Image 1: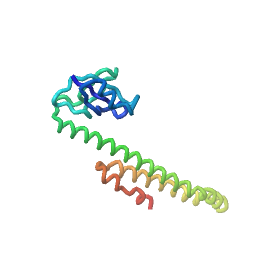
Image 2: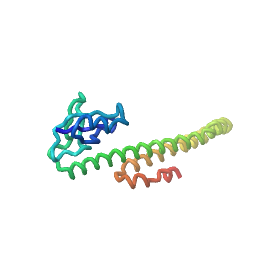
Image 3: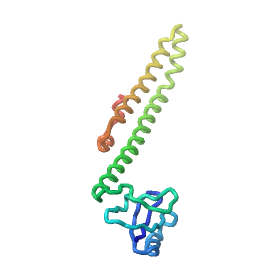
Image 4: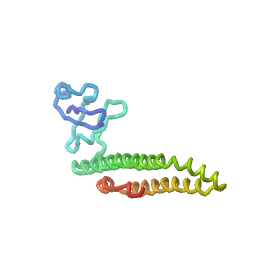
Length: 166
């Protein structure tokens, strides 16, 4: 038997010890962030693959029957997917913010278009204003669609969404 120190926020095993006291002593700077669980450690167990049960009483390997290199590859793939989604959320927010800023910048044109149309007796200026506003939204949607199609983290980080608004 072994004692696994499990990080509750990161949801992974972070230490393997021979005694419960040793595990608690090593985690002293992290009160409330960890738990220590007794576990029947096997040769193919890998700490980051450990998952705590819903009741918080037992641990299990998320990838039973996999070798340690296979577990490492699976965890790296999960981490890559998380990084990709975090970067996507950031880019999505930047695209939406840019579109919102551009729409706010042309808001003054609405009043001018309304006045111009009132003088001319038509709706040409307001139509032009609404088309310009809609164009910003279309560009935002195009930028988001292009960004969502990217599956490589480095390509996503290099993605220049502002070119869609030029």
